[in-house]
Length: 439
Ligand code: CAO
Image (cartoon, rainbow, N blue to C red; front, side, top):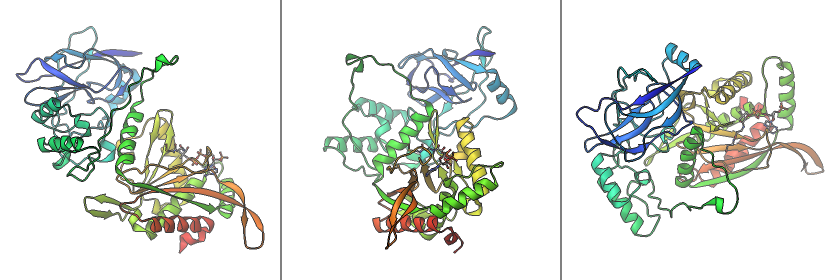
């Protein structure tokens, strides 16, 4: 059984008739308790109307520009019984948000039919921490004062494209002016913030149905989130991809032996060997275990490895912490656990934070090489394709060797081509002879 509840506009103080400036959800979206449903903007503040419960959006009852007051209905939400039970026993994960809620007081569910007894408190937008890649959410409200929003709107500037120069990414009037100047001066001039005021021509608007039958499907929440991150990372990081091959003939024999010994306990795939080899290479080449922070490089002394996991809803990157301190079996258990958690949609924000370096393995599927996109603020990512037996010349004759294709994309602002070639060469050496892990 599931019940439907109405989400309503909470107490807005003395304000009323406040326009809706952004809709943050649409029918079919799975939402967390306190997740923003829409954004209201008065001349004093911008605020989100939070969902009173975890559940699924059945209907959005308002549209952009509607003027809302306290108690107005904004959406109908289905609360699954199982979700309701979970909510009762455990605190929900904090919603991914660019703003820290100042007053995230619980929003009581308004069950359809009975009148609402109490209303939630609006979540004011006032970020107190810097943006990171897990927090760039499409459709989220850029951090700017109402006056700056009005200014941007008058100039027809989409604030999502403006980089804020103040603490926490706050956008100022000057940022908007710089953005406009950059656009007028003819294209991709760099904004003074140094993060790149990329100016692009508009996305083509095409009525595809003119050319044949079409169906339209909304993107999943994960696709929207990862899409925004991927687009930013691809546009802002000068990527180069270094390709190499590792002879894993002996590694594979060892993996099979180990796999047979532990077949009733855990599955051992080449990926755990790649995690260990990556850690060894990160230790040898510390610039790969780093992040850019303005004009400094932050070198990490820990080894947390992100693993790209393909789920029916899209790509997620849970992180295996302290991979340097774990053996192949422990890594195999952890890999199985995080993959299952990812596919069951149970990963929390914490599971996906703190990564140093990401591995994206398509080796179980196929292909010979690809160019993975760096998971900012990391500076490199390893793509792995399917190993194949190939004839390799040993100086006298061709011998069959199992060759594993490696594709290392790196941030050329931080890493030079020579360093990247040394990194993959070293990885290939480690994978070819695992005894090197002990050196
Ligand atoms: N070469 C040859 N075979 C490989 C291999 C490789 N590089 N990597 C894995 N395999 C084999 C495994 O040994 C396993 O074989 P068996 O079933 O015969 O034992 C089979 O392929 C399937 O492996 P798997 O994919 O289930 O396991 P994994 O540990 O290799 O990967 C995970 C786990 C979670 C990374 C993977 O399931 C996944 O989601 N991969 C996709 C990641 C992705 O989408 N990246 C793209 C990002 S860019 O859009």
